[in-house]
Length: 204
Image 1 (cartoon, rainbow, N blue to C red):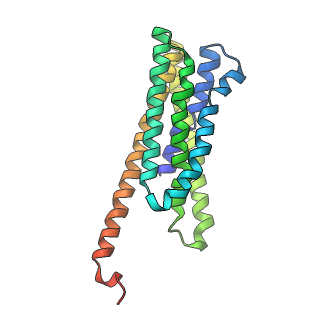
Image 2 (spheres, rainbow, N blue to C red):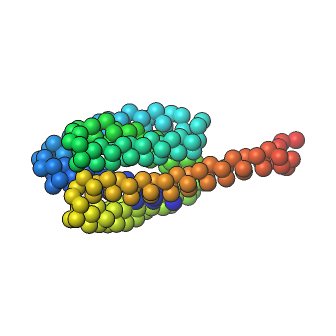
Image 3 (tube, helix red, strand yellow):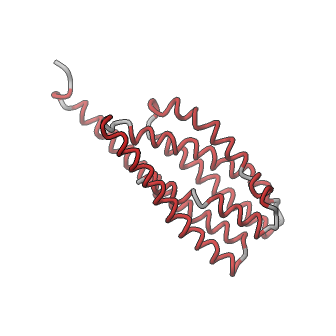
């Protein structure tokens, strides 16, 4: 569920940014693509670090990733709104969107590791397929819904507002994903406490 929600929200992010940079601001495709480079590098750096500590830290690392990503989206929405009203340069997005890359590195592979950790080996292929299916469903629905919202706003209020609204929609979906992660974290902690208190679960 968390995987599906995450991809439902974040997959449309770079499509919206590309539309904003090219249609809204008139940049060429190369320039529009370059604005995502810091986020890509940040994700490439944080993903292996998260992979090193995910077993020790657990689901908390995924929640941190969701929070950092939401902060990046919120700051990015602020940048585009200030650009439209006060002339703030759009290149501040290089830094704010980098936070979404940090968040992605802390969410995607750690969540996959945690989701498959207790799956019996004979079901590993099926479980991996379920995760991939969730990603594809989230991607398809997210791109359809969130871009429809953004394009609808763009026709009446311009791309500054449209991108901010689109980011707002992604934040809402990410917040729901965070609730799912928090529920899973609380449930796993409760299970550990119950196992410690069960005499039959201890040797001897």
